[in-house]
Length: 437
Image 1 (tube, rainbow, N blue to C red):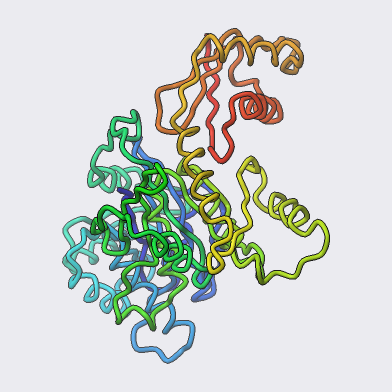
Image 2: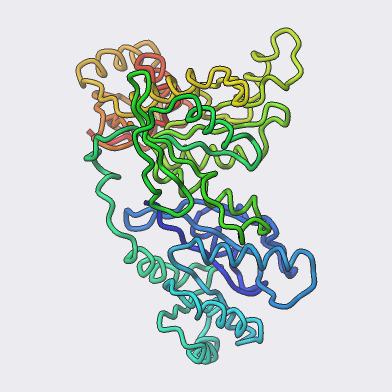
């Protein structure tokens, strides 16, 4: 199961800066104007060999009538409810404000572990001033500077301690049924797809109650095929309906991804692929999940000659660099090609588990290296002597060579393409490692 950490606090305490530091990328908009983080941010970070989801929320302002602040309040509440642990961020430069007090009250009611983080502690005076934050009454308190990064290591160590060590990340112990998650934005037809798959046949063996209260697992056994479908469109508590649907559905998609082997990403043919679809797609790639892209409502799309082909080309441009994914045009309502979709998902699940014999791997890949050598770096020819597949849940390959750091991205792409062409890894993210022989 994925572990989720939410970063909360009033506006301008440096939540986005910390978020960017955790993800090592400039993703959130960071600015000194109050309330800039209107876009929620989510990503995956790794620490001490454990990876977890991080959600950055907007600045929390209680009892305000501002439209944006009301929305942000809803999001913060959802984030607190959905996360496994919460960072409560404050600012040593301004001290405790009434907004911090309000946030503290909200978090004291939550049973989740809360890490009180005092930011902008970058000199001794600030350190002395920061001791007033003990009065907020949280026992886990960390003094950091998210700009310079001091203190963030201790904070991450404490977070990582809460995460159980997952054996399945290293070795595929549970060779159980393949699990598929239907993900995508609200209203793309996730429920219709599920109902079309279930509705036709009454041979479902069991309804297993989902491990998270947001997903129902359905065990299928039809046409000699057996798999488990994780439905995220499942249960919706009535109180949730008026809350921020899009945010909620993203958090749920992330949770479903953590459980699935293959993600069926549903896109609305009439609307095309959105930035959010792309970010869900790249998140699934980072998590090493198999992916099948289903363009739904194809019966409603306007068609000219070559439409499907042109649509596919456009789609792949947006999904680059990982374009070796099956794309299927379906209609959940008309039940067009939905069983084909399941067949392909099963193939992707198989490919993801495939272990390629080392002899076969070397024979093919060393030939490809012979026909196109790695570029010479600083006068040194890079020689790749041997390839082997690593025993991981995501297909990973180790290349042993004399200068592992000198193999550049274009050549890595060439090797990845060779692996894909020769061993049918469609829809499966793969990882390449270069090691000193």
